[in-house]
Image (cartoon, rainbow, N blue to C red; front, side, top):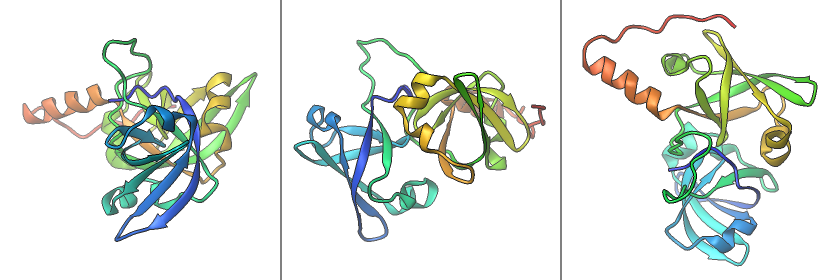
Length: 206
C-alpha cells in the first residue's frame, strides 16, 4: 500500500531484457532502506526488490506489467518516481494507492499558470466510470486531484514542489503515463455493479 507521495526520484541505470520482461537496476538513496523482498513503487507500479547493492536496487518487470504499464518503454538514464510502502503507524497523506496500474494515459497538453502547471491527460474509455471531479488519481505514482473531467480527458494541477520533486517536470506532450484510479472509487463501482445497479458512465464537461 502506498500514498502517492513520492519519496525520491531514482535513475534507471540498466534495463536488461529477460524472458518476456525486464530486469531493472535503479540508483537511489532509498536503496539503503530496502532489503530483498520489499515492495517499491516505481513510476506508480509496485515492484519487488530482488537485490540491493549499495545505492542500487534491482527488480524484475514481468510480461504482463510490461504490456499494461509504461515500464516496458523505460530508457537507461531516465528518472522514475519512487515510494516505499506506507507504515500504518505513521501519518497517511495523499490517498490509498496500490501500485496496480489501471491503464496508460497520454499527455495532451502542458500549460503554466503562475507557479503551477496544468496537465491535460487523455485516458482509456474504460476508466471513465472510475473518475470523478475533485477525486484522486495517481499519475506515474503521484497523488493528484482531478480538477477538470471530460469524456476522454482530465485536467490536474501540479504545485511547484511536486513539479520540482517528481518526474512530472520531465513530461512532454504525447508522453505516456501510468494511471491508477482511486481505490475506494473502484470498490464502490464494483459494489454497485454486483448489486445490479451498474450503468454506463455519463459524460462530464471540463
